[in-house]
Length: 244
Ligand code: SF4
Image (cartoon, rainbow, N blue to C red; front, side):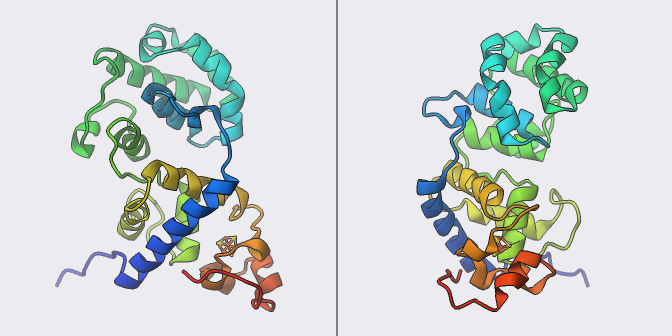
């Protein structure tokens, strides 16, 4: 008999709903400001930035933002530019040859269609240089769909707060995929995505957790692991925290 797919339980969903609510509240006073988050930023810039953000710190992308979008104000301009010249602008991000090649392919596709991408995952699978993460960014920013920007940071937060995934690749773990979709099910999905990213960067950082000041600690599965900071405050769990 085939085994049932590993999907969030009702209890998981309740925790994830509460996590999303907490993150949106936290974001109001703690958000990080980046140029692509300014009101009125176009979908071209937002989608393009998500391509640049992969495997790169947000501040590194912010550092080249003005120069890059000053030189490349639309998909057409990228499409008409030689990959080597494009690479010169991308060098500070690392992986610039690969990134330049992918961005150029994406731009050529977009330039022929006035910047409009397909609005389904199935059709986006045929767009060059579009993987699951960028497909979700397109559906979120251009088509207004409730899609998670699921990366290692969002995955870490969900896994610590709810439960660990079972598969190594986050793109293929059914529980994590469903859990991240549930996270953006309520509230403003763009804000929820940014809030998860910022909380992961500012508080639940992979290199330096700030568990002692984290309001999620009472339900965090990290307490049961070897996390040094978590162990430090485990004995003082009487301080205020939020149960999700
Ligand atoms: S308690 Fe620590 S590990 Fe858990 S969510 Fe908060 S910062 Fe992350």
